[in-house]
Length: 294
Image (cartoon, rainbow, N blue to C red):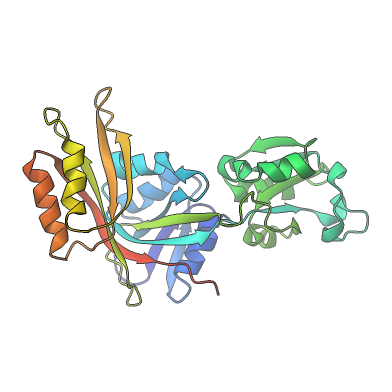
């Protein structure tokens, strides 16, 4: 592809949308919204977009295993960058319907009959539900944006949604209560994946992600893998086992290494791991971009 880059992501008004707008705030790219994460991946795998944006890990819920499995088993798209973005959910509805005087700040809990959101977002707001809306029916939908849209399309029913301020603005609804997530430090880690290279001159930290499959006849192989990094004083920010899907009890290890591939230590560590019979697959070496509150 040439010219303006295209980025596939989850629906408009989701946290993914907010995160991508933040990531590319100084760049001219075209956003291609997809309903499901499978559509996001396939858009780039099929050459319709240059990159896909994948939420891969959350402070509260940990790894998004479905998305990791797609990255490992379904597509072959290198990781080009990572960044973190706050996942802030808000209670959204029609203030004219849910408050006596149309003031969003004066919404009345008893007027809310149902609250909708994405399953992950709903799980992150359960303390708020228990304390403020214990009587409300809960319903999960495919995205927070879809939940807000459903509220918009069903006036007069007393419905509300957990979603982003961006979705509320798009649907011309009111933010009844800001920041209703159970934890203030709720961040999501996003990956930019695709065949097109990505450069960021401001990046000061880099990571390399690899998959390691251990030899079946080598006791203590995982210890040897970890030792290859430990004696070189290379930090691992994440190590997680996932099934290979080939047979019961067969696992690979997903490892994030806080080092770029083009350093002296990284290729040497990989060579040492392969020397004991491990299979190593490179998922990407990329800039790791911190969140800077604007």
